[in-house]
Amino acid sequence: MRNIKCYLCGGKVQATIQNGVRHGSMFKVKKCFNCGLVFLYPVPDDNQLNDYYRNKYRKDYCDPPAEERFYSDIPEAKLRLKRIKNELTKKTKLLEIGCGTGAFLKTISPYVNNVFGIEPDDESRQWIKEKLNFDVVSDIENLDKGEKFDMVVMFHVLEHLPDPVNFLKKLKEIMKKRAKLIIEVPNVNDALIALYQVKEFCKFYYQRAHLYYFSSHTLKKVLKKAGFNNFKVNGIQRYDFSNHIRWMLTGKPGGNGYYNSVFGKKFNDEYARILIEKGYADTLWATVIA
Image: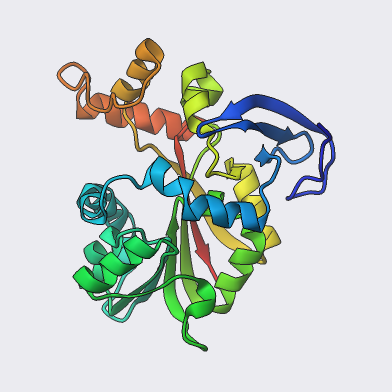
C-alpha cells in the first residue's frame, strides 16, 4: 500500500504503527516521519464518511436513546464548564460544534447570554430542539449569514474532520474579534500508548471515526496553518490511576475509580499532575484567541 502526502506537511515518508482499528479492520494507522501527524489510512472520501455517519456510526457509538446520552454526558459537561467559567459573562454568545444531545449547552446556558449548537445527527438535533429549546443546525453553512460568536467550543470533534485546517478557517470567519475558541481532543501521547504501551488500549484507542490523532506539537501546527497565532495547548487528565491499572491488568476499559479505597483523590491529583507535566495526559485542551 503506497504512502500518500501527509495532510499537514506534505511529507511522503510514513510508518504504519498499527494494522486495523476499532470498528475498522481494513484501516491502518500511519505516522508522518516529518511532522509526526498520526492518521487513519486509507483516508475515507466524503461519500464514505457520509454513509458511515448515517448508518454504522450510530450503531457503534450512539446506541442509547438521546435522553440517556444527555444525562450520562452531564458530569463531563460540568467539568468543562468549570474549566472556562471564569471566561464567561452574561454577554457571551456561545456556539458549540458537535453538541450531541446538548448536555454542555444546557449546563452552560445560565452563565451566558445565548447558546447555539451545530450537530449533524438528526436524532440528537431533534432532541435538543424539542426538549431543550436551543437553536441547533446541522452544519456551519446553515448558521444565519453574518452570525458572530464570542466563544466557540468543540469537544472531541476535530479528530473526526477530514479537513480540520479549512474547518478552523471557517470558524475564524464567524468569531468576533478577540473571541475564544476552545478545542478538546484526545492526546496521541496518552500514557497508556506512549508510556505503558498497552496493546489492548491501542486497539481500542485507534478507531474508524477518528481520522487524525494529535499531539501537542501537531495540534499547534494545525492551528498555525489555519491562521491562528495566539493560543495555548495544555494537557488535562480525564482518567485516573485505577483506569490505567485496570487497562494493564485486564486489557479492558471501565476501571475509573476501581481502587479509590486505596488510591484516593490526593494520589490521583498528583498522578494526573505528573502525567500532564511529562506530556502523557490523555487529553489536550487548546485555548485560542481569534
